[in-house]
Length: 640
Ligand code: ATP
Ligand code: MG
Image (cartoon, rainbow, N blue to C red; front, side):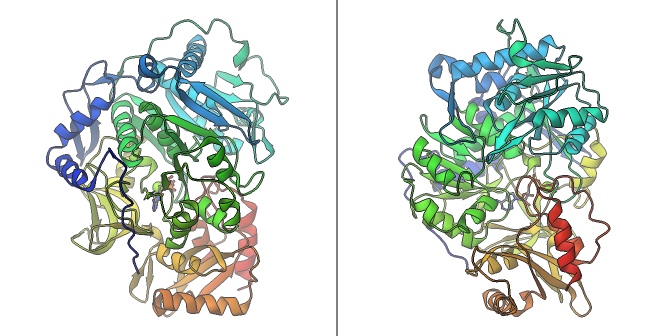
């Protein structure tokens, strides 16, 4: 089954060849302190760390570089001024094609200083939590960097979230300040950000001041007691030195996407996060000066934090920020932008790849993609079918693909192939990054060796590991360290093959146990998606009298396919032959769409409840992209 695609010829001077990977990985395991002390030198430290790793998983206390002093804004902006002040730091394109703005490092520096001064003027200082609620515009990055500059802790809330979701996150971390803008555009539609902030504040929050950036000029309500038009604030141009931050001072809080339950306020600290972001960006994307890097994630997610803002800028890279959506004005938008801007590295999510694949090859092929040299994916397991489409159609079988497994909790990439080092296997994330020690553990906590399937744990700490759940260290310990003593439990199921490649099989909660056989939801989904008429599939278990658990498959079809009984039969047969009769879906439920989080991940816990006929206890649905879909799915379930 597993196809193996040889690593395309490495570029001259690639940051890591296969032999170098072996050597560096070995060193990162045998001498972690030496290895990470050296990698930490990618950054400018005001005081270099002498104490490197200091952690325990029982009790849970994690510290890295703890006597080091640095500032991440300095590392992303100021330190580049002597060498590349006039290089582009941020290349922005708005919702309308061709609406472009560039910021050089010099301009970015001036903007960040202004925003930092604005925060200080309003009384914000080190340790304050500051909520950012933005569309994908440069001011989102500027505000993040301004917080880092003065030592305030940012909490970015995705600009597509409702006032309720925003309210909950402001209250959870007791923010006294919000930075937002009047409105944003997504796919030709106005998102009323300021009005959403007003609605969130109306429910009662500790917020004292709101900085409002003027982006669209749409009409907004203005409350003189709290609101400050950013462009009307005076005296912002004076110097604003970067605060000296201890490596373990908090950098940001970010709420997880809520695929599996109530979002957790993940806390990352300065030094370890900075080292992880900078190091993974350097090796995984093999970045060279002058290249244009495009990560399509929103800054409201960790991928946007680490690979739109901090990772690229810490490496002096040019990062592309895009306000819009992949299908506006039509589904060739990504490739149109790749052609116009000559994007070198393109990093997106399986959900986007599957949606674009559904539209066929035409929209891709009509644009020149010869500038691309590396493709990446993150967010969910990518079905081999979608991987191969990305490889063949988008990358012309020329560009390596990095399938990067990681989590909000890990700060950055943890399992991936490296572009100049490793063969690729469609559907497998690949091998551990430096310092990462994956372990597969069975239900009794036994560590499995060699080729095996189990629950994915990480045996050792890494610099980018989250330090706590904000305000709830007990929840941190409970969630990640109680299932398997002395290990970090990721919540994901995983298979390791005979070559040591890792295959994420889905959330552990979603692993199926059908008549005593363990099946990963990802495997059944990939089999379904490999049928030409299937665009996307989500598989969950439900109680079954005979088998214990039955397989319930929600399926969306490609544009012209008919959801009829014949196709249902055909799909069952298809899965039988692709995997085995054990994996045959018991119920196939055609639906025009799947419920997803705002970050585009399929919300299987809701699908599971619906499949179980538990309509009353769907749990937290606040992060759902389209809540109305749930009623239609329940209706469809009732008819089965
Ligand atoms: P919550 O923790 O609130 O349920 P979430 O897990 O979706 O939300 P994220 O931190 O955004 O929040 O997502 C991390 C998860 O995404 C991983 O645990 C894994 O399940 C999945 N994932 C990310 N990248 C990959 C990948 N390359 N392959 C397979 N799965 C991936
Ligand atoms: Mg998670």
